[in-house]
Image 1 (cartoon, rainbow, N blue to C red):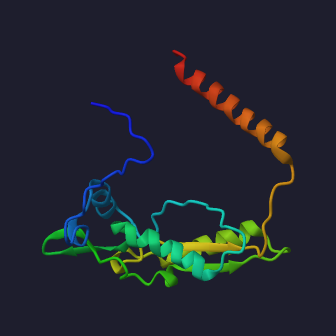
Image 2: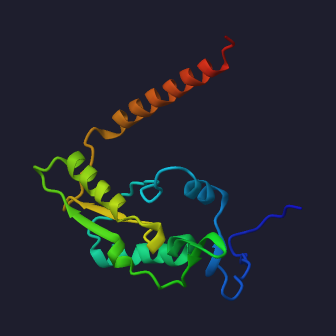
Image 3: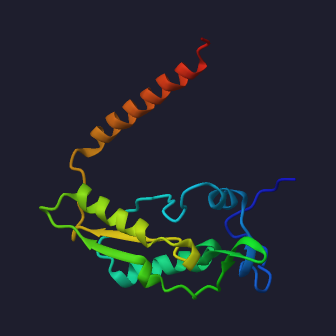
Length: 178
């Protein structure tokens, strides 16, 4: 049954059980697949690019990352294989040295951003080690000032329209009977 809720209505969440999210648990199906397949899994990754606020400093970046890591149990976990089998061991919030996860890389005006980013990304992948609890890395490419595209909103709209048109063409190709 649905009901209207206005902005003044408090939303109550379910309280986490004492010790919830901390300790050992079996691997989820994807994790089990990763440890069973041939080859390593330590460099497996998912990436995301974020734009940082102008003027943010290292303490601001580390504090923000710490809030995320402390909230998400899996970011405080390590992969284990013991008498219980493959699993994950998760430590309590505040137990991760978040500062060591954030690598700041200065990028000068004459630097090749793509080359610098590729090198920093490869180094970050090399620091991943799920067995020791290194399951996340943050690379801060610091250009020292904000750089914005000066092409304006019209150029953005033209690009967006082209992407949407291409997606529409691709969708129609999928509907064709061969």
